[in-house]
Length: 112
Image (cartoon, rainbow, N blue to C red; front, side, top):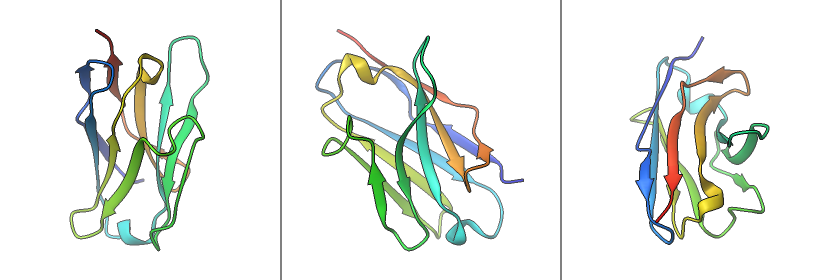
């Protein structure tokens, strides 16, 4: 099992930015697909962005153009840069590895 530890959440005003980080354990990070999901109260968990081992990415329509997923294989870390944040981006954000390992989640709140 891969251990995932997220950081970087917090409270930000609408239009602001945050960068989430997810540090992974294990020696096969560079071979893993990594993703960020989010879950708002009363909603199902949804995919936000995914990055493949080769670097290709895909995004939910609601965040495309505002969020950027990236990875640093040397640091075994995946990032989610979130710009132009909206109140509807408020959720717990989860890191995911290989479509099966989950982090504990980090809260992102967008509010004035």
